[in-house]
Image (cartoon, rainbow, N blue to C red):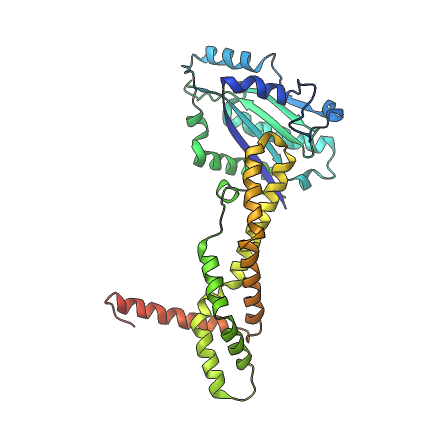
Length: 330
C-alpha cells in the first residue's frame, strides 16, 4: 500500500540558512544524514529555483508586500512531500518527475507560486522526495503561518487536500498517515479491557463452546449457551478488534519505514515513531495473542449463533439500563 505524504514545518529567520544548505546540497559532507549518497546528488533536480539566497528571496518578498515582521516571526514554511518507497519502485525519471510536478502544482495553487522560494527533488536518498519552501503570506498581504496553515487541524485539512489532488493523477495512492495515528502512543483502553475480561473467563468459555458441539446433553448445551450469551456482545466484536490492532501495527511500521527513508532531517518525528513501534514488543503483542486465542475458539461456534446471542444480550442490557434509569422495558 502506497501513501501520499506531506509535512510542513515552521521556520524562523535563524533556521533559513541551515535549511537552504541542506536542501541545495551546499555542504561537502553530511555526517548527520548517512542516507545521502553524494555520488547521486547530480541526479537531484529543481521544479523551481533555487534563488541566489533563500533569505534574500524572503526579505524581498516581505518588502514587496509590505508585511509587518516581528523578531520571532515565522518567515518560511519548510515542507516535504513524497510517497511510500514502494510507490517509486520501477518508475522512470519521467514518471517520478511527473509526480513531483503535480505536487508542485498543488503548492502553487494553495500557497501562491509567487511565495515559493524553491522546490528541489532529492534523488540521492533512499526514497525520492521534494523539499518545497515558501513564505507564508496571506492573500490580504500578512505574514502569518497561523493563517496559512491553520495550526494542527489546518495541517490535517491541507494533507487531505493534498491527497485528494494527487489521487486524481495517481489513484493507487492512499491518504498519508494522519497525525492522530502517527502520534498515538496507545490503542484505546477498551481493547485491552475486553481481551483481559474474556481471557479471565477463557477456560469456561472454551468449555462451553465444546459443550455446544455435544450430540447429547441438552441441559449442558443450554447452560453453555447461557454462559456464552453473557459475553456474546464482546466476543462478537473480536474479529473487528483484531483487525484494529493489526491495522495499528501496520500503520506504525509503514509510517516508520517512510520516515526512515526521508532521512535524519525528520529525526524528531522518527524517534517518536520508534518509541511507538517498540510498544509492539510488550502490551500490543500480548493483546494480539489474547485476541487470536479467543477468536480461534469462537470460530468453532455454529454460524450465526454468536451474532444472535449478542443481539439478545444487548437487548437485555438495554432493558436493564432503562429500568435503572426509572424507565420501562418494552
